[in-house]
Amino acid sequence: MPTRSHIRATDIARPFALAVLVAGTLSSLPACASPSGPRVILESGGKKLTVQVELADTDPKRERGLMFRKELPDGQGMLFLFDEEGEHSFWMKDTLIPLDMIFVDASGRVTGVVAQARPLTLQPRNGGPSRMVLEVPGGWAAAHGVRVGDRMRVEGLGEKPQ
Image (tube, rainbow, N blue to C red; front, top):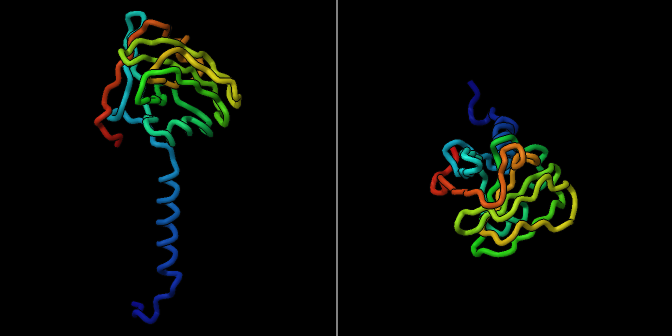
């Protein structure tokens, strides 16, 4: 059994370096939506559609959005929350995947749908006055019949994803 004088610096440094590497990697991964976390329920055509969401509720989160993502699984999205209702425009700079954008006013009514927003473009997109904007995989809104006038509510805002 080694004594204190026999322990090499690398014996201590390797586990420490591994812990730093793992912690750094985990902190750089996007926060994934979980069944116990925030979700939206869209009522469209007599159906209730559930989307697990990541929240973009601060300026830095709203600015980054879904940039650099290579995929967005079906049933997941990002919900942009704004302090005030207004005309909120979005672009697709550094966004690698097509997205649908569902604009929703403070009462929960869908005011506009931007379908299949083309990736890596600077064209501003707006769907009318909104307090929230839900981004989902491109084609999702059409596949589920989401349209202006549908209703959306948010659940689980107080829950932390596991």
